[in-house]
Image 1 (cartoon, rainbow, N blue to C red):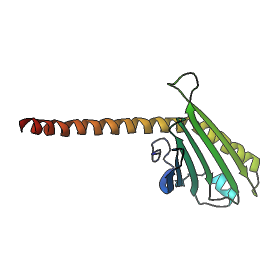
Image 2 (tube, rainbow, N blue to C red):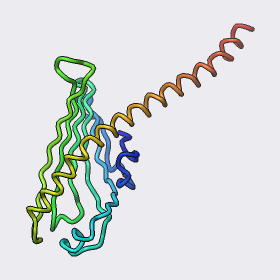
Image 3 (tube, rainbow, N blue to C red):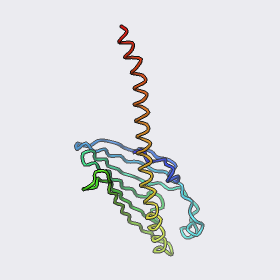
Image 4 (cartoon, helix red, strand yellow):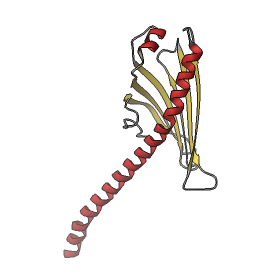
Length: 171
């Protein structure tokens, strides 16, 4: 996937592909490391006792072309002694309308060892819920960008093909 970088989520500043393969069922598995930079409010920095704002997230995705589905699981690997966020996104075709896609988002958030942990869990859950729409917009942005690239490649191929066809006809 080419979801990052995108204008809807500028906090993702780097993406490294750790592993990618196709299994026997034809599904594409990718493991990536996301580098993020979050602007944490000063109150959160004081609660967690850190001014560090860069975090790393491990992401595993599975694209199943037969089922036309996409599953994405991510978990933080920074600040795990204080917080864990496990998120799962699933995209699959709508069973009754092939023009629509169903997105299911699940997240488990645990804040440990800091005061106001339930408050922080609630803030994070609200933020993730509010950002769900941005994730959908980002996927639509990626699809539009890929479609534009495909059209550009097709147009280039047509331009190249025309002189070749003319050269063959002349001989």
